[in-house]
Length: 69
Image 1 (tube, one colour):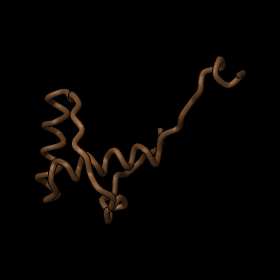
Image 2 (cartoon, rainbow, N blue to C red):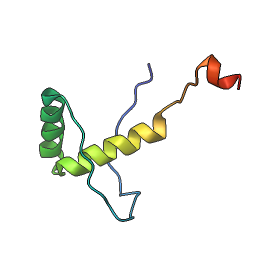
Image 3 (cartoon, rainbow, N blue to C red):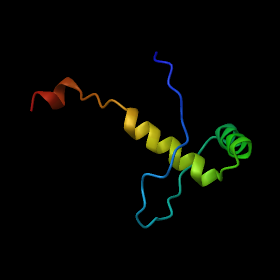
Image 4 (tube, helix red, strand yellow):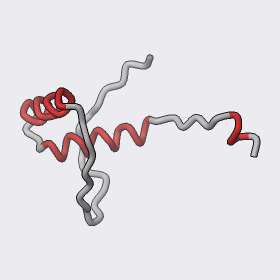
């Protein structure tokens, strides 16, 4: 697996925001809060930055069924 590093940079998205609700494991939320505290960022900033990083680095793999259509 590649050794990826999450770098906190300037905000990329500047459009209007919306509230989204989803469930997280409690220990994951604790880790997010620890990162937020260590970096002086908000929980929201850490989660948004992490999701943006995931979107930029994900690979979408289609099943053979979908690629044949």
